[in-house]
Image (cartoon, rainbow, N blue to C red; front, side, top):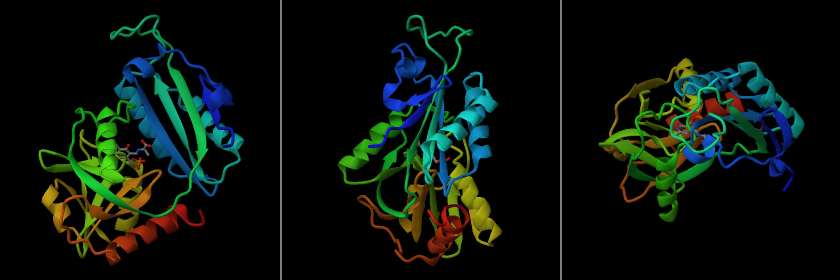
Length: 277
Ligand code: PDD
């Protein structure tokens, strides 16, 4: 494997050469937020939106965020990597404690960490498992505290599934690392933004693009029975793009594997953001 370019507290280095303190609050408390910023054909997808969301996440945790430093480090990582298609992972944590303490010292300098890796943006067909959403009440913050997602996604893996679709009291929220869409013959549906889901950037880009091409989109409150009746279901994220769901574990669905509305949405997205990758 090629060496991975990384940056830790503004020092560029190879990933395997970076040493961090075990008293980093990212390590002891997940007191940190992150972004995954994709680039395709050497073009960063929705850079400003990713930076804005990172700024919002930092603000929610009362972390200092240096927009210029972060932006320049992300660009520099991509430049150093010489990659055409990939993504940057970038994390901001509260900093390093003198000794583990729930209450933090306001004067801790934030700790930042990023790396860049190759990624192929290819269309995927996936199997999902439905599960109760076990997470906290601020899933709109892109925090590294993802234990609920991790437990559910690995449970899904044990059932031969690639992802989960979560629901809270039967109301659909999102995937383990993605947002959820489904469609009937003429309308695309997706859970409305709330504290219970991440405002996905792929979600937003897709909604804007398909609406602009005349497709009806409804954002609202939907339940598990809507998944059962859907003609197509797909998940979106910066690394998955649009991943079509071809099977829902233990559920008899009405899925049409050649659903023209899904195919239109996928085509619009690929042409606009991923073509040539
Ligand atoms: N995750 N919801 C959750 C819980 C996510 O973790 C993600 C993405 C999304 C989609 O957001 P976006 O379209 O902005 O990537 C929704 C990233 C890719 C990750 O954690 O690796």
